[in-house]
Each structure stands twice: as C-alpha cells, then as structure tokens.
Image 1 (cartoon, rainbow, N blue to C red):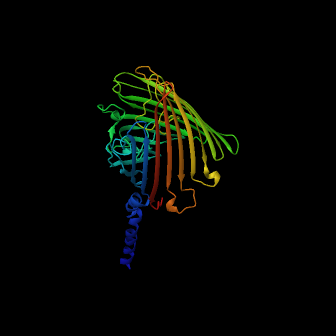
Image 2 (image 1 turned 135 degrees about the horizontal axis):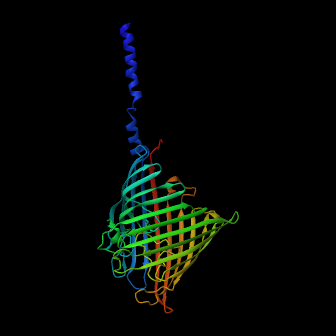
Image 3 (image 1 turned 180 degrees about the horizontal axis):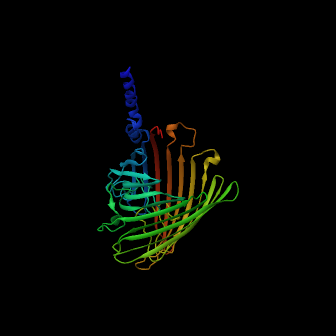
Length: 429
C-alpha cells in the first residue's frame, strides 16, 4: 500500500511533464505549415507574338513562349517566409534576316536567343504588420516597376521595408540592381539608368493613401548617386453622379534631374512633367480624355519601369522635351451585351511641340491610334480549369510628320496569351 501511495504521485508528475512544456509536435506543426499547409506554388504560362512593321526594313518580329514557376512558403512562427520564382522565354519564331529580326522586340536576347533566370529569390521577416524583404524580388512602386508588357517582367535586387501606418501604405528601401525584360542577369542601377561604367544603387521610397474608388493620394521618390533623382505624385478620385454614371478625375506631376557628378550626361539637367485625366463611365461604356506636358529643358527619362504618364501608349511614351500630348479614348465592356469577360478599347493620341534640346530644332508631330481587345474566361460559365485563361490582341498605328510631311509610319501587332495554375496548402491558420 505504501509503495502504491508513493508510486501514484510520481506517475502523475511524470504524466504532467509533457503538458507543462511545449508539445513535442509544436515545431513539426510549424514546419508543416511553413513548407506545406500555408505554402503556394504557381505556374504561369505566357505566349507572346509581336510584329512591328517599320517604314524601312527590317521589321521587328518574334513569337515566344515561356513564363514562370514560383514557390512561396508560409510564415514560420508568423514571422519568417522565403520564396523564389524562375523565369524563361524561348523562341518559337525568331527571324534573323534582312527583312525581319527578333532584335528590338525585347522578347529575347539579341540574336533571338532564349534564356532562363532566377528572377526572384527572397527572404522576408514581419512584425506588427511591417515586413522586411531582402534580395531578388518583385517591386511595383510607381516609377520603379515591373514594366510587364513583354514576355517577362523586370525584377529587382532590393532590401526594403513595406507595411502600413494607419491608412497609409509605404515602401522604403535600397535597390541594388534590376533584371531587364530581355536579359537574364541583374545589372546595377547606374548601368540600368544609362551609365554603363558606373556602379550605383538606388534609395527608393513611396507612400499611398486610399483608392480611386473614393479618393487616392500617391507619392514616390528615388535617388541614384551621381546619376538621377526623380519625384512623382498624383491624386484622384471618383464622383458618382447617379446610379449609372460615374466620373473619375486624376492629376499627376513629377520632377527629375541629375545629381552629384552628373555621370549620366556629363552636365546638369532637369525637367518636369504634369498632366490630368478624366474618365466617364456610363453602364458598360466609358470614355477618357488625358493631357500631359513635359518641360522643354530635357526629355523625361524612365529607365527603371514603364512610364506612367496618362498619355503613355502602346508604342510611344509622348515624353519628349517640350511635348504636349492629348488623348481621347473610349471602350465598351461586352458584359452589357451578355458577353462578360470581353472588353474593347480604342484611342487616338497626338503629341506636338517637342524639341531637340541639343540643337533647339523642332521634332516631329506624332499620332498614335490604338485598338485593344481583351478576353478573360473567369466570368464565363466554363470549367474551372479554363477560367485562368486570358487573351489580348493589340494594334497600334503610328504616323510621324515633320514640316507637314509624313516622315515615318509604323504598325505594330501584339497578341498575348496568359494561363496560370496555382496550388495552395490547406492553410489551417
């Protein structure tokens, strides 16, 4: 009886030991969530056809296929995450002759060669709603962005803090290098900016408040020592007139210049650009009107992403020194005709008053006419495996007049097919 009496407390204490410390499977559960339950795998397929018919040969043309494969872990202890994305573009048709060449399409390397690249490879840590991400990653911050209008987007090597402070989202970090759309390697931001013999990085910051559904404010700035600085801001919002008619208004302004040793051009320069845009939405129809103007001292430079001026079109940016550009466009969402997922847009843009800052002579007056047809399978009553399908066809006609004489004419065709499948873990938390 005494042996049993002494034995029972001992057994109870031994049984209680596992309950007082962390469960033996806690780390295993975290690793399972990190590597499986909260992980994501993505396969994105993209095929791209571009045919630019120039006034004089050769034309720029290519058909490529490729895309990217990405893996992203869950958050280990809700703090640490890793991910990677591999990209490839491969030629299906890449001519290299006196009449047609794939060079200049930005779909392949010069000579029509495809390539593979590890465009993203990053680690993130987060706390209190703020996240720090290091190494190769996707950056989309106004003037520094993926420029995703070819087979592959730009990606960046950066070390950045992202998050929200109340209603304001922010980005603050250092960008060391970028991978251009048609290149497999990362190049430093000085070289990417146009100074091949200069090794420089970039300080980048941005803030964003609200959305265009109500009211939005955005601002960003970057600084590349001895190369270039640029600051951008915009504001806009939506006014609902009645149940069927909505008006959206927006304005933008930016300033840019050289700095330090002025290694980009060898001498100081600065310029600005500003503009406004109005969109009218009436049921499935919409119209827009946009105006932009660039300072006459220098053309605007956009080496780190797609130019985000309201009059940036399919072929031309309309950002030459002194250029004043006006766009009128319209579109129709065919959901109003019982075809959800189909949208058509058309626009005409005129740019004039541009000057050559070196000589002061007038440059050509440019016209661009764009047609854009988009199809998305997602809203249609189709099998689930077809819903990620997206197809887009674009045509641009460019005419340039100098001294009231047609000096250049160009027609460009683009067809883009996107399809994405993804796997997501059970996400038990």
